[in-house]
Image (cartoon, rainbow, N blue to C red; front, side, top):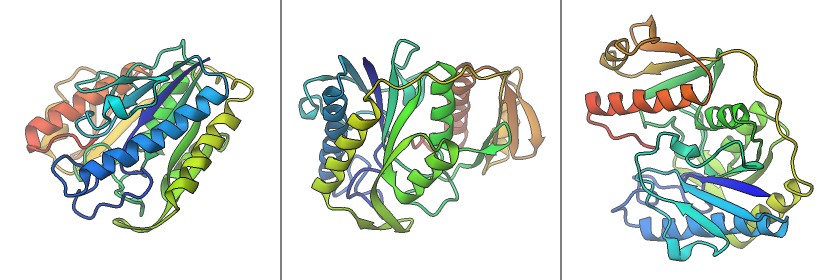
Length: 278
């Protein structure tokens, strides 16, 4: 059984980060944050191994994508580290994998969750996939499903878990903290949270999960940007059309549409002088 783990940082046990101290290099508590990140990932790896996984690939999907230290990772896992990555948060995921797990997730832009945003801080205001509000969770789930790989578990705060359940109630969610505001949380004890992660992963992989049905048609992806200059420039990409002055849309098959969205973010970053926050 081959398992892919995508790990973000905002939804990691114990992290709340008012001024990016916990989750960005140079922050006062960043080194502690990356240690906490490794512990949550290792709990998921232990759960996968206990369920019979023969291969576990971990993709560091946060910010610079160099947060996890290889020596801190469980020896049963391999690590994809650094950027750029054409497949963003799902780098390394192919149809040969049996299941995908999302660790340390956060809710989409506009939600009252810990460090909520959609990929690029304030620059992306809203995302819709076939008219359905989506963030990083929804896009990752839909892209994995298009590859025929089920997302089976997600960890994060209560807002992220609720977002995943609304998207697909069959996904096991592990709540590691309760959002009390965007930068404040009631924390679940770390050891308790990690036991819950490990047990949930083992349970959801035993027996091996069923593959999702192949999606029909080509979905439409729409993104509303803070800056009108970004969607104006994106109209130079074939297939991109304007919904309004700040919203672009494109239609195509996943995962190709997911990869194209990564190009959109690079364009936005170059125009706004804001590096993608993903």
